[in-house]
Image 1: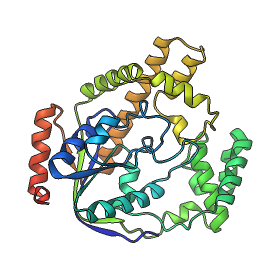
Image 2: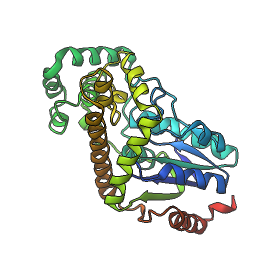
Image 3: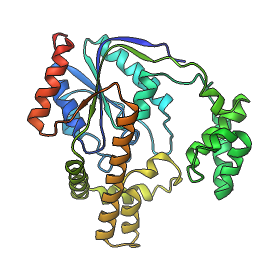
Amino acid sequence: MSEPHHTKGAILIAGPTASGKSGLALRLAERLGGEIVNADSMQVYRELRVLTARPSTVEESRVPHHLYGVLAGDESCSAGKWARMALEVVRDIEARGSVPIIVGGTGLYFRALTEGLSPIPAISEVVRVSVRAEVAAAGEGAHALLVAADPVLAGVIRPTDKQRIARGIEVARATEKPLSQWHKEPKRPLLTGKLAKIVMAPEREWLRARCDQRFEMMLEMGAIEEARALAALGLDPSLPLMKALGLRPLIDYALEKIDLSDAVSRGQAETRAYAKRQETWMRTQMITWNRIFEQDSERLKDVIFSFVDELGLTSR
């Protein structure tokens, strides 16, 4: 298990998709001499730059960016794996005298970093591969395998969530202790110290419009070609990357199963629904974070910079 790190000052920016958090992180990094660390579960994968809204190569050239596109699409990235990677990156950033700015929309990633992880031993790749093959072969019967291994966990996991089902089974088999029991073990945060915790919470109708506009922009930037290229890899559809917002409709369009207007409509609906789930999670699970309701770019910048100035981070 990674040893905790006590930071002299890090900025954490969470927010729903299309809320403008990446642009804000970039402006903060340029002002503070900071470096940006990705906390988005889709942007860690290299195959989908456009469709996961990763920063452009031009934006990445303006300040250092970390943990973007670092994993292959056939890999899985748990909150624990990401938190350990992020912790090492934060240590390196501070060793260079820079300010870590951690930004993303995956609330579980932030929780793993700031609240801690259950002390689950590493699961061997042999067990992991074996269980995932068994779950894939079981199809709709996979949930019954989890019921046998960890009935408590099975009670809160959807039968269609093959990734979490496999995780529950592999932990129970490898450790001889159900994952639901591991979750009850004491946790400790990995990142402590001076943390500026910010949640962007723009007005809902404004955000819905932004979601729709951004999906249309993705199409202009090559999202269909990305989806077609990813489909050609033949990856397991249960992998995290294959659940990227709008990916399935665009693949269906590329395969001529639906027309473009249907693909756009479905992709936009998926994005809006996901943003709404993110809003709900962050409102109920990040109650101690500073909520920022501004959505105008200039006013938002002034509010954030004023808040960061109060923490003394501009003096670094």
